[in-house]
Length: 127
Image (cartoon, rainbow, N blue to C red):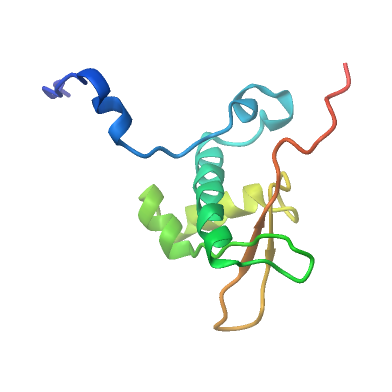
């Protein structure tokens, strides 16, 4: 594939874009070693959605923020199929994966609430 003639950034142009954040700790801490980069990217998208939840006041009776993020949204953002979207969510989930999210279903036809958990809430690894 031939390189495309992308222009250079000049001055403050680099600051004009919004970015998704993937916590550095998740790329460096051994406890996250088995999590795929696609799942880490999805976690960054879910963290970003937390801002909207806070603005909308989406908190449960315990004061915990939750989000709604559908499989269709995942497929659109990550350009993947439903199987991969489901696999990535399972990789992050507390039932089958590392435990960075917890999904609470409210029945057929209702959206699933997703609790995004703090990635830095673990005690330091034993040495």
